[in-house]
Image (cartoon, rainbow, N blue to C red; front, side, top):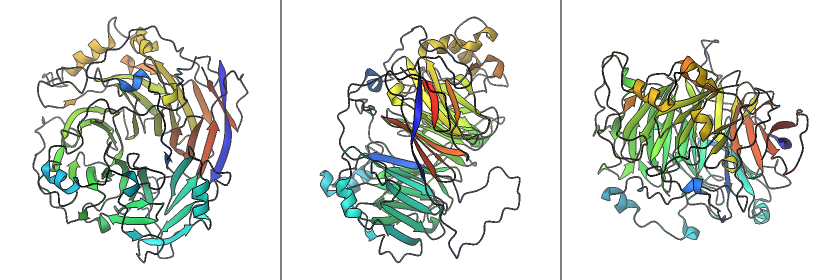
Length: 573
C-alpha cells in the first residue's frame, strides 16, 4: 500500500554574513560549473548518545567472504516514474525499531595494526569512556584569529541535563558557521552552540561513534582553507590540525573517522589526496616518503585513473607526527568517500568521473569504474556491503555489485546533479534494498531493488540471453586494445587474489544496462538539496540555503494521502 511521509519540522539556519575582513569571491568565469569552495551547502552529522540494544538482522552479520545470495523471485514491482507507485516496500522491521549498525564480527584488523610505531604511541589510551582525552584549548575563550565568535546557549548546562536519553543531536554547517542543535528538544530552533569562523568555511564534519558518551562527543571538521578542527562540544574544547595547511593546503571536501578507531580520521582534500590524521598528534611539515610507488599503467590508460601513490604508508616507522598516512589517488578533486560496513574497503568518487574501490588496510587500489560523463558527487554502501550506490553530474544514480565487480543498474529520475545518497537500513533485508537520493533539482527520490530483480532487469529485452554477470565479466577480460587484463580470483573483494593488480573497468554501454525508475519522486524544497539521512522514525534532508526538514515515516496501516507541499508519498510495508 501507499504511505505518506509528513513534514514534521522545518528549521531554517540563518546564513551568516561574510566576515568584515573577507574579500568578495571573484569568479572570472560566470559559466563555470566546478566552483571552488567556500560553500558546500548545509550538511548534518547526527548522534544519539544513549547506548542502544541492537536487534541485528542476519543482513548485518554477513561476512562477504563466505556469503551466498538467495536466488529468489523479485518482491518489488518497478513502479511508474512519479509518486503514485504501487510497489511494495522492501521493509525489514526490527523488534526494537532500531537500525542495526554494522557488526564488528567480521574480524577486520584495525587500521595500522601490526605497526609498532603506532601501537607505541597509542597503546596507553584510556579505556574508560568517562576518561576520554579532550582537546586542549577552550574555543569560547579562544584568541585565535581562525575563530571569530562562539555563542553558547545561555542555559546550555540545563539543556544538556534535559536532553532526552535517546534524542538526536545534530551538527550543521552553513558557510562560516557551525551549529549544534538538539533535534529532540521542543526548542530545537535554538542552537546549543553556534561557532562563527573568521574566513574559513566548514565544508564537512563527522562524529566519532566509538568514543561518544553522555558527556563526550568527538567531532572532526574540515574547512575550505585545509584546516581541520577536533572539537568536543560538551567541554567546548578544540584543537586545530593541519594548521595553515602545513600538511596539505587544499580544501577538505569530505571527512570521516576511521571505523573502530578512537584517534584516526580520514580527510579527502580537494587536490585528490586522502590523508589520515591522528587527533592527538602534532603536525609537521609533510615530506613525501614514497615508500610504495604507483604501479605502471598502460599508455592508453590515464595515469590519474589507475594509480594509488602512497606518499606515506600507515606502516611507516615515522609516526611521531601527522599525517599517519597520505595517499594520492587523482589529480582531480575528490568529492566524497565512504567506508564499507566490513571495515576493510573504501569507496571514493571524484570530479573526473571515476569511482574507486580501495583496500585501505592494505593500501591497494582494487577497482576503477567510470560515469558516462561528468563528475561523481556522492557514494554510499548498502548495509551488508554488497552494493555501492553513486550519484553525479550525469543526473544518474548507479548501483554497483561488489560481489560481481559490475554495474547492476542506472537509476533515472533526477533532472539535475545528484548530490547525496543513503541507504535506509530500516527498509533493507537480505533480499530487498531501499535507498534515497537528493539533488540540485530540489527533489527527494526513493528507490527499491531486490536480488531477484537484479537477474531479471526491466531492460533485459535488449540483452542477449544469459547472466548479466557472465557478459560483464567477459567484457572485463578484454581491454579496448584487445589485450587481456588480470582479474581478481574471486567475485568478492575480501577473498584472496591471484595478483595485486587493480582492474580498470570499461564503461557499460547504455543499451546493455538495466534502467531502474524510482518508487517515489517529490520536489520538497525551493533550493538545491545537498544532504539526506534516514532515522528510525523519519527522513531528514537539508539544502544549500540552510533549510533542515524532517519527515515522519508513514504510520502502520495508514492510507494514502495526496502528496502536497508538506508530504511525500511512497510505498510502505
